[in-house]
Image 1: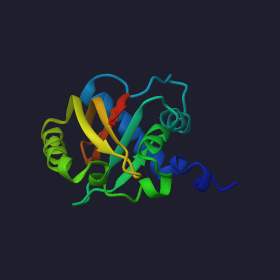
Image 2 (image 1 turned 135 degrees about the vertical axis):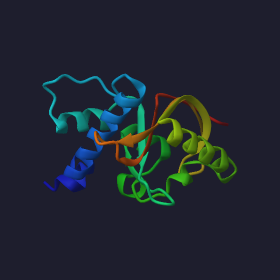
Image 3 (image 1 turned 90 degrees about the horizontal axis):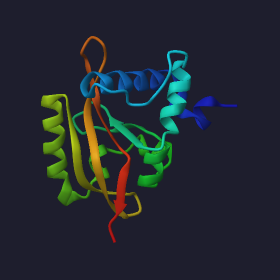
Length: 161
């Protein structure tokens, strides 16, 4: 079985990225991103996060950041497969009229480390619009403080009719 094809989030570089997601969320928010035990391996944590009942997305540090992670809930919500999602500029998760607000929000999170309780409108690949509620956005950093991108998580969303 080709692990990369069927479980791309288990590639070594993505397992490391997921460790940074979890580390940096704990660093900024003071609470774990996902409940684990000290016995969980990094692969088990990667599977737990990918299959969690809340959304987790992230993008890199490019000038026009590209999405580099989305768990199953994110893929379902934005109606994309892994390959499409992880090759999409993150700005396309919001409608053009919402993008300036999104940019201000990301800049605020970048300067503060994280922000919480965000509500905004996002758009799926098929044009479906939805509110995200009580989102947390944070800078992805490693233990040396190097910036690797930004991430967001939320478990509440509602369709806009």
